[in-house]
Image 1 (tube, protein in one colour):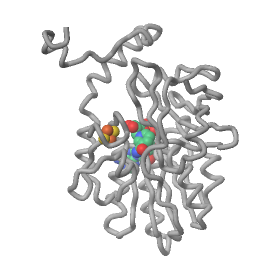
Image 2 (cartoon, rainbow, N blue to C red):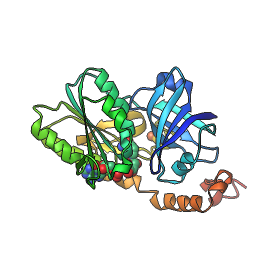
Image 3 (spheres, rainbow, N blue to C red):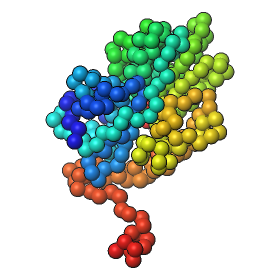
Image 4 (tube, rainbow, N blue to C red):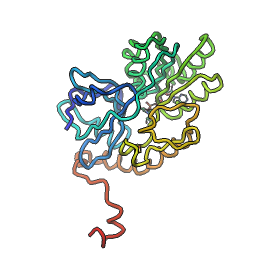
Length: 297
Ligand code: NAD
Ligand code: FES
C-alpha cells in the first residue's frame, strides 16, 4: 500500500496528492509517469508525476476527476492509501539547453508541464510559460509555474483572468514578436496540442507534446496506448509519452481515446449512484469464461 501523506484541492475536481513512494521519488525524472491502482478490483490509470521529494520519499500527483477511478481517487484523503503505484515509467522529457523555450500548460496539463519547465530553466534556458484555463477558478499551480519561468503568461477562455483567449492566441503573439523561439513544449487537452502543432508547424519551431493515450500495463505489452507518429505505430508508454507534435496523428489519438467513452460514462454513473459500494465491485469478467463455460466452469 502507498500512503497518502497530503491531499488538497487545487480547483473544482482537481486534487493534488503527496504519496509515499520512496523508490519512485529517488528515480523519477520530469515527464515520467506512474500507473496507479486504487484497490485490487480497480482499473490501472496512468498519471504523470508532477514532482518528487527524495528526502521525504514522496511523489506529487495531480488528478482531474473526470471518470470513475479518478473520482474515486479524488475522494481519498491524507492518511488513506492506494494499492499500487508502479513506476517511474516512460521516457523523461528531453532536457538540454535549447535557448528560448515556450512551455504551455493547458488546464490540468499544467501539472505535467511544471516539472519540465523547472528542469529546462535549471538547464539554462529562457523559459516563457503560458498557462491556459477555461476560467479563473480552474487555474492551477500559477505561482509554482511562475517561479520556474522567466515570464509567465496566463490566458482564460472567458477573459476572467489574464489575457482572454486560448493558449495559442498568446503563442501566436510570441511567434510574431520574439526574435526567435527554439523549442515549444505543450501539454494539455488533445484539441490544444493539435492547435499548438498547427501554429508552430509553418514556422518550423520544434514542438513536443505529451500524449495521454489509454494505457493498461505501461510497459509496452498490451498495445492499448498505440499512437500514430510519422505514420508509424508507436507505444506512448515506452516510446513516449513525449513526441514531435508535427508528426502526431491527433485524429487517431482522439478516436482511440473515445473508444471506451460510453463504458466509462456507465461506470461513472454507477459510481455516482453508489460510491460506497465501489470497493466491493468486481468490474472485469473473464470474456473467455463467458464464451466457453465448459473450459472455465
Ligand atoms: P480545458 O479543456 O479546460 O482546456 C485548457 C486550455 O487548453 C484552454 O483554456 C485553452 O487555452 C486550451 N485549449 C483547449 N482547446 C483548445 C483549442 N481547440 N485550441 C487551442 N487551445 C485550446 O482543459 P482541461 O479540462 O484541464 O483538460 C482536460 C483534458 O486534458 C482531459 O481530456 C485530459 O485527459 C487531458 N490531459 C492531457 C494531459 C497530457 O498529458 N497531454 C495531461 C492532463 C490532462
Ligand atoms: Fe500497454 Fe503501452 S500501456 S503497451
